[in-house]
Length: 187
Length: 187
DNA sequence: GTGTACATGTAACGGGTTACATGATTGC
DNA sequence: GCAATCATGTAACCCGTTACATGTACAC
Image 1 (cartoon, protein in one colour):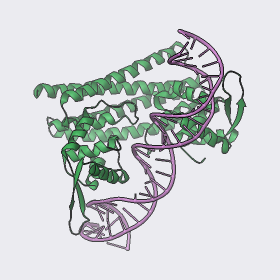
Image 2 (image 1 turned 45 degrees about the vertical axis):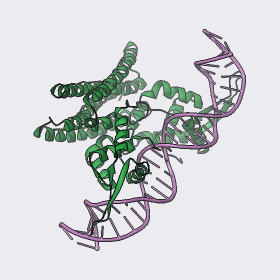
Image 3 (image 1 turned 135 degrees about the horizontal axis):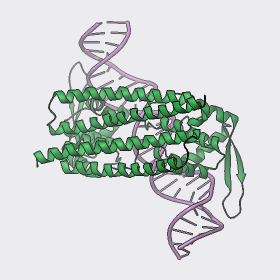
Image 4 (image 1 turned 90 degrees about the horizontal axis):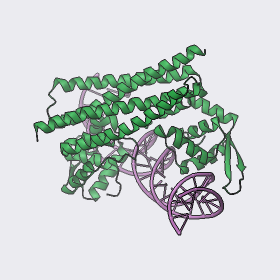
């Protein structure tokens, strides 16, 4: 695949569930994945063309009178394979946005539970690492005095990091528990 | 200003505290603002040139033998004005990253406490709105059965939204309290 | 002699956004 | 008569990243 970003995989993931047109995909993202992912027409349509060129999808044009023609794309075996490969690859924490994990979990049922648990465990570790780093900085704050107006603002941004990483850890724990429950019931 | 993104304002904010070279700015961002902002050389150096052209900064070249020359930039009155104007402008929640609030709070001591409180209040409202939307979706989940493996993953991503917005609200409350404390002591 | 800190920059690329273009049908 | 929904797409732009280019001095 020429371009190797998450949007290609989102398309493949959606097409993996159901053959769809660009329009369908847009709607689906807007209705279901909105909260942590966005996609625009100028990404979707060229990307679909690219996927078609690479043989990851096939195209069928459906004519319907009254409404415009629909170009319905279906995933191929090689498309499924490359998508699965992406799903199973560890999350890239370098590139920003940070929603790649959410995206992969969204499609979590397309791989095995153990893999999703390990994605979450790794995320938990990273959050924990950041959290304890923030705790370290917080201790320095408390060692000095925090009455200085400039420091209050630094403290507030620090506090943000603390609260968010804390919440992230909590979320991971809950999610892992939930998946372990599933795993026990369906081994 | 030709380009109107946060990086320009970060530069102005840093220069507002102290006249610095591009190198100094890079270090400062790496040491102090890392957690929610990154900047690279290829942004800094052209941006400084742009600020100079627009008259928001002035340049003084300091020669030092042994080490390379330092190009030290100082903010001008018009630079301060435009920075202050940015600070006082409400956070743009459209553009992603979502760290503009953190950035503005980082420089919070350069505007008045009341303004920072209102930034935080607005943020709290937005978080609260999202949170209750998530609660609504969660109710739908509980109405049906969550045993379906596909739904577990949707539930997990939903849970992420819930936990994170919850934490965001908590953070806002703490921060607002802190700033109100300051306000009372220095009115 | 190897790496790190100091210091300034450019080129190419990549991914995403906004805005625009087109055009039929349905409901108010 | 106007807006919304269906449906596909392009062009321009913007912001940011990676990688590269160049060169000194000091510490190990």
